[in-house]
Image 1 (tube, rainbow, N blue to C red):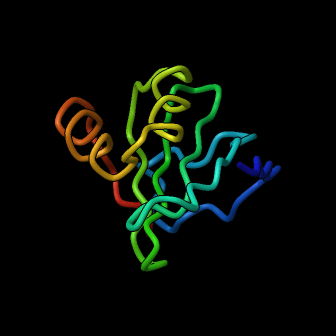
Image 2: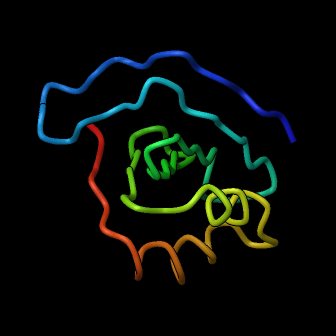
Length: 94
Protein backbone atom coordinates (compact mmCIF):
# COMPACT_ATOMS: atom_id res chain seq x y z
CA UNK A 1 0.00 0.00 0.00
CA UNK A 2 1.11 3.53 -0.71
CA UNK A 3 1.38 6.11 2.06
CA UNK A 4 0.76 9.67 0.92
CA UNK A 5 1.68 12.56 3.15
CA UNK A 6 0.09 15.95 2.64
CA UNK A 7 1.46 18.95 4.48
CA UNK A 8 -1.66 21.13 4.29
CA UNK A 9 -5.15 20.95 2.88
CA UNK A 10 -7.56 23.82 2.23
CA UNK A 11 -9.68 24.75 5.19
CA UNK A 12 -13.43 24.45 4.68
CA UNK A 13 -15.59 27.56 4.94
CA UNK A 14 -17.20 26.23 8.13
CA UNK A 15 -14.78 27.19 10.91
CA UNK A 16 -16.44 24.99 13.55
CA UNK A 17 -14.78 21.79 12.27
CA UNK A 18 -11.22 22.76 13.31
CA UNK A 19 -9.99 20.99 10.16
CA UNK A 20 -7.34 20.04 9.27
CA UNK A 21 -4.42 19.39 11.54
CA UNK A 22 -1.01 20.47 10.34
CA UNK A 23 -0.16 17.02 8.98
CA UNK A 24 -2.40 14.19 7.80
CA UNK A 25 -1.02 10.77 6.92
CA UNK A 26 -3.01 9.10 4.12
CA UNK A 27 -3.17 5.39 3.33
CA UNK A 28 -4.79 4.40 0.04
CA UNK A 29 -7.12 1.39 0.11
CA UNK A 30 -7.05 -0.03 -3.45
CA UNK A 31 -8.78 -3.29 -2.48
CA UNK A 32 -11.83 -1.54 -1.05
CA UNK A 33 -14.88 -1.09 -3.24
CA UNK A 34 -16.16 1.98 -1.33
CA UNK A 35 -13.27 3.63 0.53
CA UNK A 36 -10.54 5.37 -1.48
CA UNK A 37 -8.27 6.36 1.42
CA UNK A 38 -8.06 6.64 5.18
CA UNK A 39 -6.09 9.33 6.93
CA UNK A 40 -5.19 10.26 10.48
CA UNK A 41 -3.47 13.07 12.30
CA UNK A 42 -1.88 13.83 15.66
CA UNK A 43 -5.13 15.31 17.02
CA UNK A 44 -6.87 11.90 17.05
CA UNK A 45 -8.92 12.60 13.92
CA UNK A 46 -9.52 9.91 11.33
CA UNK A 47 -10.50 10.89 7.77
CA UNK A 48 -12.36 8.65 5.34
CA UNK A 49 -12.46 9.49 1.62
CA UNK A 50 -15.03 7.55 -0.36
CA UNK A 51 -14.42 6.48 -3.96
CA UNK A 52 -17.27 8.59 -5.30
CA UNK A 53 -14.96 11.54 -4.63
CA UNK A 54 -17.71 13.57 -2.99
CA UNK A 55 -17.89 12.25 0.53
CA UNK A 56 -15.13 12.95 3.06
CA UNK A 57 -15.78 12.43 6.75
CA UNK A 58 -13.70 13.31 9.80
CA UNK A 59 -14.20 11.12 12.87
CA UNK A 60 -13.21 12.59 16.23
CA UNK A 61 -11.18 10.91 19.00
CA UNK A 62 -9.98 7.92 16.95
CA UNK A 63 -6.57 6.56 17.91
CA UNK A 64 -3.85 6.19 15.31
CA UNK A 65 -3.79 2.44 15.94
CA UNK A 66 -7.49 2.11 15.16
CA UNK A 67 -7.14 4.21 11.99
CA UNK A 68 -4.22 2.08 10.78
CA UNK A 69 -6.22 -1.07 11.55
CA UNK A 70 -9.17 0.30 9.57
CA UNK A 71 -6.91 1.03 6.59
CA UNK A 72 -5.53 -2.52 6.69
CA UNK A 73 -8.76 -4.39 7.47
CA UNK A 74 -9.79 -7.24 5.17
CA UNK A 75 -12.98 -5.32 4.43
CA UNK A 76 -12.28 -1.62 4.95
CA UNK A 77 -15.84 -0.48 4.23
CA UNK A 78 -17.35 -3.06 6.58
CA UNK A 79 -14.97 -2.11 9.39
CA UNK A 80 -15.67 1.61 8.96
CA UNK A 81 -19.41 0.95 8.88
CA UNK A 82 -19.50 -1.57 11.72
CA UNK A 83 -17.00 -0.04 14.14
CA UNK A 84 -16.03 3.53 13.30
CA UNK A 85 -19.42 4.96 12.30
CA UNK A 86 -21.19 3.39 15.27
CA UNK A 87 -18.59 4.43 17.85
CA UNK A 88 -17.26 7.85 16.87
CA UNK A 89 -18.86 11.18 16.04
CA UNK A 90 -18.42 12.30 12.43
CA UNK A 91 -18.33 15.64 10.64
CA UNK A 92 -18.79 15.80 6.89
CA UNK A 93 -16.01 17.85 5.34
CA UNK A 94 -17.28 20.15 2.60
